[in-house]
Length: 288
Image 1: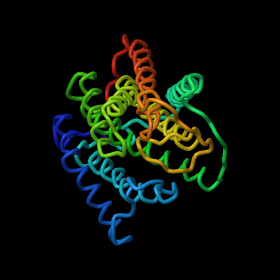
Image 2 (image 1 turned 135 degrees about the vertical axis):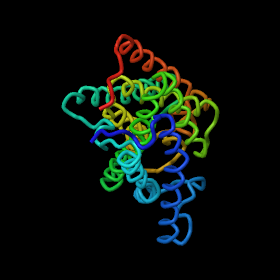
Image 3 (image 1 turned 30 degrees about the vertical axis):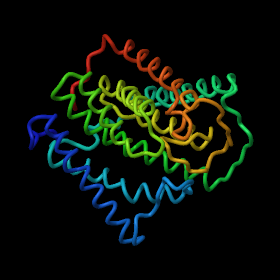
C-alpha cells in the first residue's frame, strides 16, 4: 500500500511519534491503570514485584504502542505495518543469530564473574507459572520496544539521514527512556546505549526486526528468568537460578543487573564491532 507519506520527511515522522505517540500511549496506559486499580499499580522501587503482576502492568501501560505504531504507519507513513520488518523466510538465520548472541554474552559474562568469585549460584527453583509468565513478559517487552525503537523510529530516520546517525539517535533515545529505572548509573546508561547499537546494527542493513526481537527476548529472559540477575534494575523474583553477587558493582552490575557491569560493556562493544565489520560493505536495503 506504498503511497506518498502524509509527512514527507522521515525524521519529522519520527519526531512526531516521539512528541505525540509516546505521550498518548502513556496517557492511555495510566488512564486504564487508574480506572482498574484506583491508583498507580506498582512502585518498583519498594522491592520485588511478582512477575505475573509485572506482566499485567506492562501490557496495561505499553501495549498501546502497538496501536500507535499501526496508526502512524497507516495514516502518516502511508505504508503497511508488515513493511516495518516481519518477514521470517529470508531472515530466520538472523533471528537465531540474535538469540544466541544474547545468550553467548550473558553466559560468557557470568562465567567470568563466577571464575573471579564475584558471582555464586546458591540454589535452583522452578515454578511453571512464573516461568511462562516470564516468557510472555519478555516476548511482550522485546516485541513492543523493538517495534517502536527499531521498527518505527529507526526505520523513518533511515529515510532521511545517514544510517549511523540514525542508529546513534535511536540508541540515545533508547537509553534516555531507561533513565527512570531503579539503581541506574552512568555505566548502566552507557550499556543500554551500546545495547541499542547492537539491536539496531542488523536493522540498518536488512530492514528486518527479527534479529533485534530475538536478541532482546533472549537477553531479558535469560538474564532475569534463568540466571537470576535484575533486568534493567527491576527485580521480579522469578528466576530459576538463585545467585549472590560479591564485590564491586562496577564488575557485577549490582542491583541494576548484568547491564550495569563493565564486563557487559566490553562484550557488547565487541559484538557490535563484529557485526559492524560484517556489514561494512553491505548497502542498506531500500524501504519496502
